[in-house]
Image (tube, rainbow, N blue to C red; front, side, top):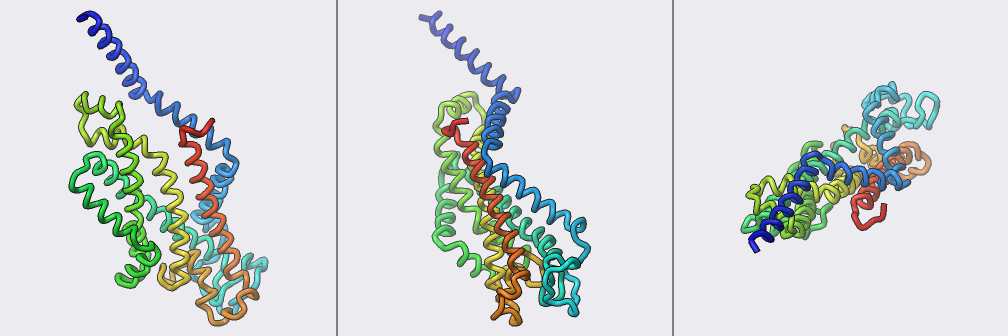
Length: 314
């Protein structure tokens, strides 16, 4: 009986050593990464989304290479000019070049969307991983706070906070993060709750691994798929919310060029309020770029979701 127990224990030790060696050498994560990339590149819409995303980012962040005009330079003699060789997308009611404002404004819109999504993910996932694993009174408090935030329509809550603290680029990013972290927290927490009773977690506890190391080294990689997908979708959502808030007059201040502020010319300019179709170049090209960028992010997010799903064949 003693010899049998020794054999079983030795076989288990060898198996655990093999798994630990594969993890330390990175073979497990490399195999999973290669499989995910193969499935992602097989998704035509995801590939199209990646191409669109990088092209628009290249245009916006490399704006000085693609336009010679300043987005804030006034030229009242050339105001509301239709597209021409000098101004490929025409000029606005202040004589500013639309193409230039689209590119420079895209920088701000992308930074607002991506920065807010990353900030919300950093707070929500960090809290969701550790507090969800530990549980207790802190988990109960954070869940109540998250439920309070999620009980309000997000756009209404954002407008109320903007009205209280004032309009600025920094305020808008902070508000997006404050209203966006609860969904990230609940997503990470639910994933941790489904994993914390798995056998590999119990084995880690038996080996005396600390809770922090278990949460951030072993549970975090298992939540990265849903987190990345959530970040992409949140980026698109925040960009659309910034544009909507700018149209309503609660977004980034008007003097700062963003996609939302450019489109806002429809409601902000009395000159074209009754003839917005006649001055289509002042809002339509920017609207198309905004739609294409949001679609690219959604394509990437859908592709990542399918690629990270172990139930999908690939």
